[in-house]
Image (cartoon, rainbow, N blue to C red):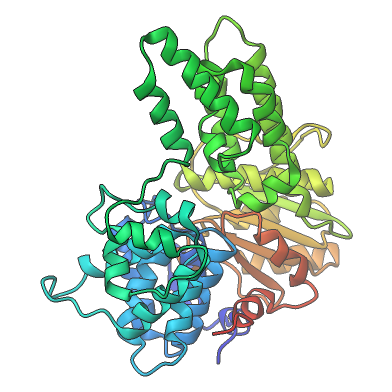
Length: 485
């Protein structure tokens, strides 16, 4: 079985990337993992959502090792929190699992939230040729049935999906899960149409609206509801991050408790909230124009602290490290958000040198004592080409490692930086590791070197992989392959 870097780095696999530039082709395994860890099934600069799904289908069909495909989906869903792309993979893989005993284990393990089942089923139904008589494979039905053991009445009620085309009761009627002590009553109520989601934060706020006699009463009831949700932690971490504006406007008295919740280290680690969500929340709260700004300042301070806490597992590297951010035109949107955020996280943790590049490269000065968000705000994505050669033409000292955050789409007219990299190594008598962090999953590389580590993903969990890379070159591959089916 091929392994990521031992196959990817061969200089004979030249190709042309989506920007029309020179590149090296990634192995199917690396292409799959990169796609799973970077795709939200939305349009990208060089590829639409539909094209991403077509690439996923092509990889599933062409790869012989279906077990690795399944393990990669579990890895992306469970450890990196990727949802839609893993739902699509689970739907596509269904027809490939005939006779494979591990199929039911895959469908059980890829489910981490109740609505993963309804999303996978919806994708499967939408992509079946015979939509009127779809045949669900036994592996899917058995895996889903076992997955119900993970969930209690609250979770089943929260994601029953009454207003969806595929409802949770449809899944129950298809797979016939064996009830457990924790969900027996809820499953029975669901089938009989009597299951109510009265304990979710959404339902509590809805009840406040229904009980209110007038606007003043509505304001008080909503404030009371928010206070109860926050003080008792009945609301999830991501939900509170998305509702900070509502808390500030509707329940100012709950702001201190909300801030305490935001900076709770154990809660942050359990939440699986992707780091860029903090930056998004910070930007939204910064837009609030209110007469009393003290609550806004408290919340902004808490978000800053929460992000710094979430970065606690950024690896501490020995020696000199250069962090490089691609600020070219194709990095607009999500890639620029991730590059600036993760680049700032690594730089702050290691007091690294930082460089940005597009047509040309330049060193950037920052204050390592600033917060991650403050460091991030100093980077400008001004557009231009993508000249990887300029990184090593500009580097002015020996480095032990170079971490490049980019979509890896070198432009037309720009060759890969192999020549410049070799000249740099000779000039400064060094041989650095290169972390090639792909932010779009376009499946092309710029480096054919043996000390190149290929990274993907928008989760801070990628830092766990980085910690292992220099000790175990196949760390990403081995982490995926260690998943049991």
